[in-house]
Image (cartoon, rainbow, N blue to C red; front, side, top):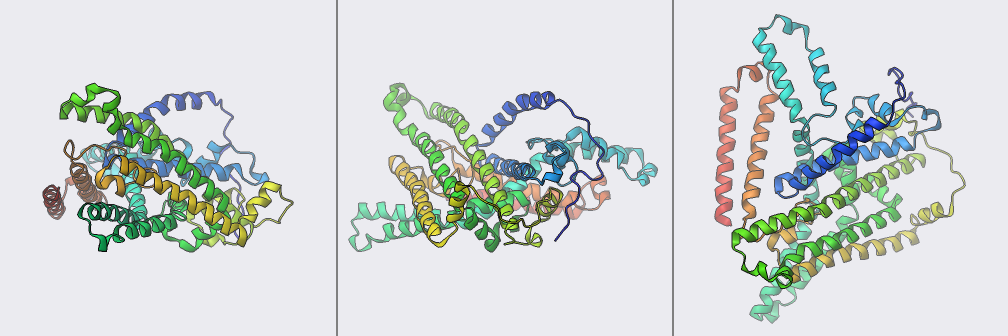
Length: 477
């Protein structure tokens, strides 16, 4: 067992400060961060940034939850002091940024102070270039971080959820195609494929919310696939998983109404029926921008609650010695060690509500909770089918569920705006970001003197690949 260390060892005492400046900062920063989130929800690339930003917020939520459960001997420090005491947790002193590096001024000044002494003999222009490169990197550090975290997160989520979505879409298409062509021998194909897809989605959604939370908290994409550990957490938090699924379903209801509403708007406002395509596109762009004011908070709340449920489950398993500290990620192990939460604790008299939650971990309780959880996720899927029946949104309506996958809530007909343009642009940005990352990870002299011939050839090759991909997609569209 790892011994608990002082919460802020090696950190000088910090004088008590007023909470007013922090409150004023949050009051001023929240509308700006929220506005950027609304803007990013309008595109595929932007929604990937929202996923990354939300995962960082979820990680901070888990750290804050663990800090609130710290051992009695560690009650002397504030949350800010606790987070500042480690390089792993220091970036979470404030809400995540969209663009600037966390603790921007502090980090840029510290980088200048850490400049190696050997640079004193380097040409002055080289020193200036490196300082400028560090400053520019700090300006977009969070943007880059949000992109890569979001890309890894949605890729993992797609691995488990996209197959079910494909079955929905194909089952829907085959069912309607069969009804028009009167192919009675093939009549069961569409419904059976849809039923299989629904069952598959319900099964994976027992696992996905807390798997997303674990990836967010640990910061490691591989942790998403630690099935044994995550299933133990799900079993330890059955009632919380049921409540989280119910919240997903409740939040999905207004979103499905908003998604379907445009088809009925001309009936309430006859002037909309006379709009040109350009005016319709502008109207829908404005409409879905304001819809994001419902979408974004729902998405963030669900991820933060899932992170807290995950963090609570980890503590439960540690207290009952059902997992060992070695099974935790480095961030988790270090944080819980500093808070004195790694050791197993003796059982105590429990409240009725706690006993009821424990009952959900018994065989009978798990059966009842499983039935309730499956029923709730079924109602989530049923809303999708009803919404698509009222207004068909092509593949996007089936392949992307904003609360589960990308918070891309922008359903514009393909004749007005092709979704392939956004997909092609996202692929191009990914290729360029990969190329730039390779260059920046190369030798320092390469960063100073410019991209080498090989680096330039690599960028050119990837740009050509992107061009071919875009042309193929446009041809397919």
